[in-house]
Image (cartoon, rainbow, N blue to C red; front, top):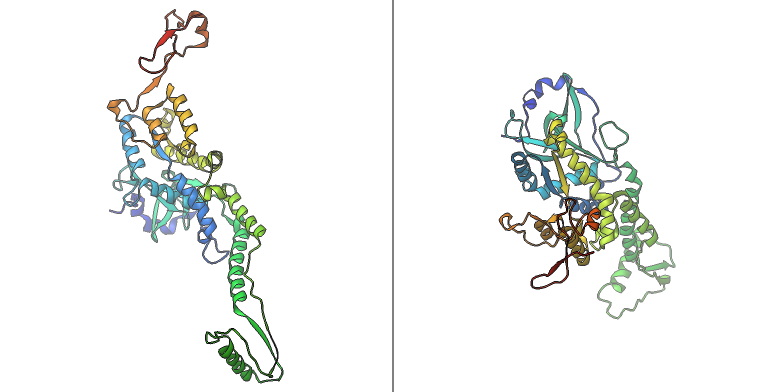
Length: 412
């Protein structure tokens, strides 16, 4: 069974001639041969974004039965040929290259309503069509055409401005792509030219073209071949002069090269440090908040709308894609956050373990429990000898560390 097929596909051929095109879209980046993704710097920028987004961890908030099924599929293997990391990386790569990306739901069979998987689909060649008042997404996978109700799909967009449904193209980047292409060609040609001509010889006599060719070959073979171990160039009276041409390596203007790189970095919201994995804590946080987090929020909302009904969403069902920014933090920052949030019952034991890339603790050993220190009390109770509003004595403070961890009551 082909997992992409829906029951609408069964009548596709009959309805093909009756479909009305709503807003077809076929992005094409043909400013130069190869396309957007074939540029080394642009591919590196997109790949870095896709790699970081692939680390996002889907978390489902829903009734336990439904939550377990969705989380198991989202967190490990959303379809039969991709892991979650591969699925997210490809989805975000499509989004950044085409500014549109589709998530197609997969079903057990053509009559099922329960989503059992997800698959990322390019927007190239896709279009939205309508039949009998129902909108369908027509798309392609491996040159095969499929259709599904548009409202069932997830549609990610960026540069969402010009069209009602579609993100705009990357045409704003065309001048920079032309500059990169021209610069690369200039480097190649410059290297060829600088390594080609080594001597300029002027003949005293006028020769026929074919004689010039023969004489050039003779001079080269006798003086510039590997047989001339002495390195001395000898020529006869037929030449009025022979002078060497200084060969200089071709060097790209560093300011021009830097401006081109800056254009690409500004467009994709990355930096040199992010691209080379040299970013410090502050640089990483800026990259996350300016580039990764908006994608995470959009993807979270798209998946929520795909898996839950409006009533379930109103009841609090949601899918989050979380990311531990602290993976890129310094050890001092990790220690401070772990201690402060764990002591206040905000983080569980396993959440702290994940910050430090340590194995999680089993549930039966308290891995998902929250703990809080007992010396905290409400401000309004400070004049009540540490007691609560009913007069109970709850104020305790730690006065020492080590064996026994001695404590004493808070006194006035």
